[in-house]
Image (cartoon, rainbow, N blue to C red; front, side, top):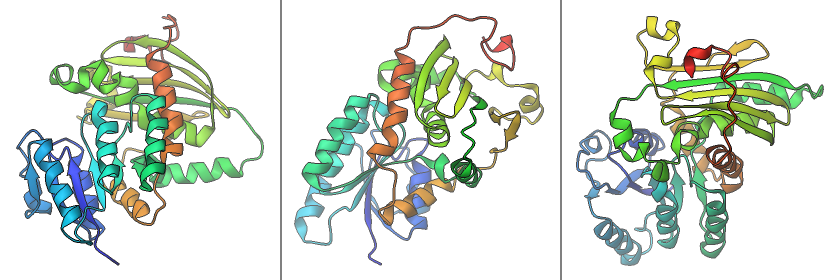
Length: 318
């Protein structure tokens, strides 16, 4: 099989090492990398010969040069790990230089941006893939199959809690700027909203019970589930069992009173997603659009104040 040539945008970011590992694990190569920050020693562990740039213009020129030098030297895929608000611009760049795009979550901030990208897909004949790694997590694949085979059409009761503690730096960075990250619902919650829709069907109604820079929670009615959900970056919200384990992250999914265990490492899931993409079975625009639309609806929703029923785990989350 031909070795695919990759470029990456945002190589100094938190999530980039998972993409570098996925490229290496699938026996492909990285020929160009871009980030305005130069703390990219991580490249030495994966692709030390990669051409690195801190300016987009020079990176773009290099990728264009590879395309024009001679056939077979061009970039096949561009992996995008840049800040959320830049994703659609970087996806357009990838397609216009003749590469497929592999973009971190959220693909875009607004559902109408998905429609615009679909037009560019048609114009260029290149594909746009998103990273929805929870869909390839073995436990969730099993649940998906179980629910698909269930003909009872029962409405499940679901409680989702995700707490990923962040320090004060978060609010200073682009992640804490609503117009750049899309807020917690988009930046933190997008994978879980995609998972819920994938497991339980289309959104029927949405309520938002609290929405602050540190936490957001509410209620969703899906085709086959009623979901109470809570997302937080505040370590004060960690339950005692997480504190006892000295962990700053807590994930919990309870379905009909039974907790689903998914605390294992997610670090290899990107590799699985890349393997599927390279077989032209990656997650497409149609896969990602429902969760983008839901996150947008949540962050623009009228807030429903219900201080007696913020979250089943207790008022202390408010």
